[in-house]
Image (cartoon, rainbow, N blue to C red):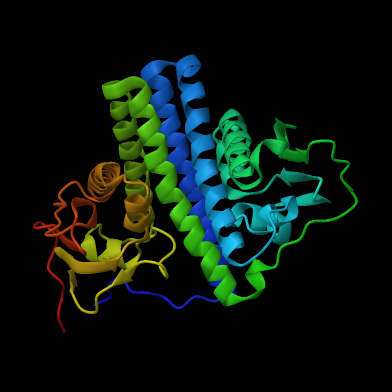
Length: 349
């Protein structure tokens, strides 16, 4: 019996986890943005999305500022990039997903191969990639440096190019920006955790903005976007297992669960995993920590409900989704009590 358990990461597994997490975050944003566009129209949707992404960026920028203030690091432009706290920029500077040049008066970041840009380009939604990077970087820069910096983002057709310049800055564009977070397992794991945290913040800050702007229609779009995101994840896993000749049931699903960042969530030892049953207790959920910080457990519960039901039922429509306790309902742990009564019995020797 294999249950979800903490996996000790190394630098290589952290890179793979970050690639997967960034792709997941892009799919999440894509589905919510598309559902919102369909609900209220692109002209009304995009200003709300831009505002939400700036707030999300500001949350990220303030987190970086807090870390640097505690470490007595000066708030400089190069330190903002170095402390970005998500695998996308670090991957661009270190893994060949792009490049960065500049100094403390101005930087230029080129993003061609980050998982988010690649996904949105493949979906013919480079406009959403540009909207995302323009506003997230604006929000982060303002929170970290104040209003002294100017941010611009453009799409060359091959890459998203983001420039940040301080007033009257004359940056040295021959200076190459570098990153070294993936050379150390511990540092890489911290970036995995921060990337996980970012996705949790993104969904509730988007949701809060949609609902504030369009009330029930905004909430409906949020629910639909999360449902589509969950259903896509479940259906992909089902198709993969069918191609491998595996019957879709709970044991096969949990044995191959692909939520990303497995080293971050913590589960109590023990539990029960069979084709008919997944009973296991999650003692630490990074999403719930972020949602409490943002006073957004209500939106976190909306996510838990819509995502898990859609994901598990897309994998097998007979799965019953139930928690005896759930952190987004105010409990200390999440007690997963998922059943598939019609699954075949396990063969015994």
